[in-house]
Length: 196
Image (cartoon, rainbow, N blue to C red; front, side, top):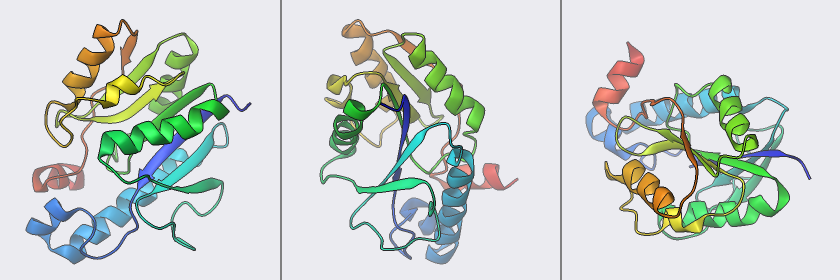
């Protein structure tokens, strides 16, 4: 059993289907270009060979992609809300690996040292590792065994996601370790801070 595995949730980079909040201010073409840049950054950060990498695409798995082309196992996200999708991905991957983390493609500030820290914390018996995002969500979640309850009763895409998840974990007496707080790129403000 390979020890460490990373799940990456991504969407196919298609005009009008990615970064829709950004597109309202930037236009669909600029939003698509921003998303493609985020995909490339995520690929660069995760290309290390020290972990197994699973890329869970939303919708149909692309036959080929300009991103994540080598060393990534392609899978499809299940249908449902974000919590169900993440829980399903953990259910699929955790039996194969002793430490699993999940990320999206929205955080250009995530780096390899933070990824390594998350796995180190899991190796040192943390039940849950979580990377809080400045918008109240999280950019990374890691666990050693499935704690499906942390995906239930969460209002996804709100500023309460991180707080609710941690509250559920503490209520279940899980040991929780927090990573540094980072910014996701979701709004025009996030975008301009990132670009400057």
